[in-house]
Length: 337
Ligand SMILES: NC(=O)c1ccc[n+]([C@@H]2O[C@H](COP(=O)([O-])OP(=O)(O)OC[C@H]3O[C@@H](n4cnc5c(N)ncnc54)[C@H](O)[C@@H]3O)[C@@H](O)[C@H]2O)c1
Image (tube, rainbow, N blue to C red; front, side):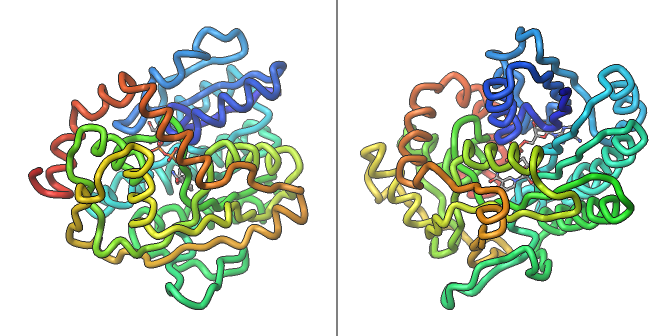
């Protein structure tokens, strides 16, 4: 089986590639990635020379390039992780989000269908459902209406609609909508690595608003196992929510990181809230549990320990990233430090 994995030089895509190569040594994995600021080729260095792995630098919006690659590889399946993925950046400039997340998805679907791909999987997000109130205990099901509140989630919601449109026309496609992931190889612009990297440098830990926003956290390997299951056993045309039942307030996540790194909570600095900051996300993952038998295996506490340990052991990986454009991005978002 040959699987094209797009966005595989990013956080979840790379973890998925490692999972697949380890679980299915007879599969061929072809990673297609544009290598934007969020993609990092060094993440893949451990698999680059594997005989059943190929990396191709390519934009999913480049139809001719994608057609050429698919005519060389004849993929059986496509898993689309490629995306502009950071909400904060979508507030600064939404255009690349609609280009990659919407038009790129359409291009991939179209080329996949024409190339006879037998299964397409779209990696989506719980953020397409919008926000839940802090109290009340509700969680998003697959039937919840889509209410995206920013350009990132809007572009992901539009992409989901296109995938469902293709599935409705008989093309075998599935969607997973997952909560926040934690684990190795995540870009330090995202909450958990940002806090780890800053805490290690004894820099302020910028927390939006009062830090009471709640996210549903899942260790990245659990997410990868869920996608693997959906790809092999999920029903075409279906959406599967994926969540860890690990609801945490941002402020509590940051305090836990301080504790793990033995840094004082006085490093925490509250900054002006993100515009339209969704208050709470929570996922009802009963469908994937009942239909496919998926359950998360890593608790949040273990996940955060493993993640902190990984960033401590892989300084060279993130130090390269934080030395570049990242500095001016942080100044723009959180002010001078
Ligand atoms: N990170 C999370 O917590 C989370 C949660 C739920 C869903 N998701 C979804 O999972 C997917 C992966 O997220 P991530 O956190 O790994 O993202 P990421 O930003 O770490 O990685 C994205 C990757 O896509 C590549 N890319 C961007 N534009 C491209 C293009 N036009 N063509 C080819 N490659 C391109 C980048 O180079 C990068 O390697 C995204 O679709 C995201 O919406 C993420």
